[in-house]
View 1: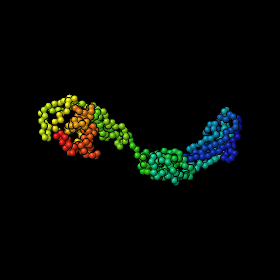
View 2: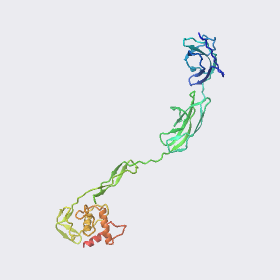
View 3: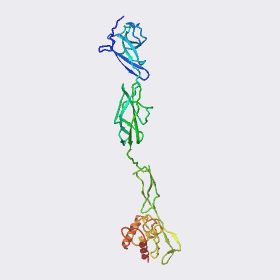
View 4: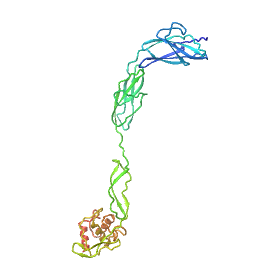
Length: 371
């Protein structure tokens, strides 16, 4: 059987070095050693107990042993806190020959750590325009070491997601928010939360309109009709491409008297017939009484009579299509307004602020010219 010699101590030239850690349930110790120089080492065996060994070979009185494999470090867990343990190591070769013990070392596993960490400083910005904010300062201390951190919008550390020291935090919504910071040590002790306040105000956003509700189309005049937007979606949207005008074609029949009787103020007809678009307008001897005030956008019987009058007096509404001679309509559109303006300018009626509006002065002139 081969003999193996171990130097197993905690001094500078030692073969075995160890450190220990703690957890919330029981102590643990991590042992480290230098590998044996023999080439046929299969594994190492660790002996330990709460009393010192009684001999130099494996029958030396330890209460516990464990094969740890061909490694040079091992963590032994579930040790009792505040108890002293003794450790020795042996080497086993590929033929299952086991050496005698290494030098024995001992260590007292400290009592369980119950001191909680302390978060001494925690600062975030006073205001922000984004849901993600930077952590300005986060300082925590512990009697052993702080190992993890947690940020929450609650004063309770329950349901904390623990991790490394954070540099940012993302809120779910804007508004006035209070954020708490917690720290935890290796024994599982958790600090009291320290908080800071922030006001988050997100920039206003606007949406592009994607659908519209419209008014009815206006009467077709000069091969064009229009409409206006009543509402749009989404609410308070801007822009978009509403369809506000379109071309149109409208053939309009006119009414002409077959027999007319003329009085001083009213034109009466004994029989009305529907004429074709090419039929002549009423004779200039027929007098029409204008009673309505007319303006752009109106639809009225007086508009048709007005267009007939203008077309016969040299103030042409349109040369072809709706509004032209024989195709007069009841709609007061841009062509009618332009013809009325020419009539008013020629007869010194109104000014630039009233051109295109048929009021009392214009009606009086119309009646005067008709005789």
